[in-house]
Length: 129
Image (tube, rainbow, N blue to C red; front, side, top):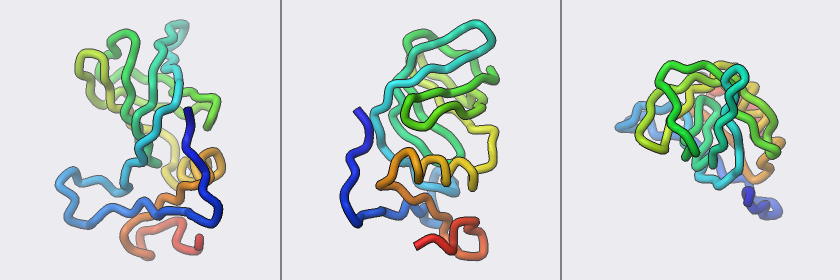
């Protein structure tokens, strides 16, 4: 099940500068079916949260920290990613592509979403409204 679009509603996903997690973008809670591809290996997963810099996933098989692969979903296509951390059947993925490009991709694929940085000076999407 994907994000539910609301007409004329585009919540900004800005993160506070004093974030204890030190994230540049807020994560969007989602529930999307996906796959993590590593060479010929494919691991089924559910994407639980997304940002232009990464994703949190529940996986059918353990992933290995540092593994490089591709996260895919029918909703947004394929994004190169590295496994940043793992925990039994969960993993954090760090996207390897440009966050501004990924934000644009998600804004198209998940139309209720707009990712922003805290300040216009740092924000490649500052001209979006």
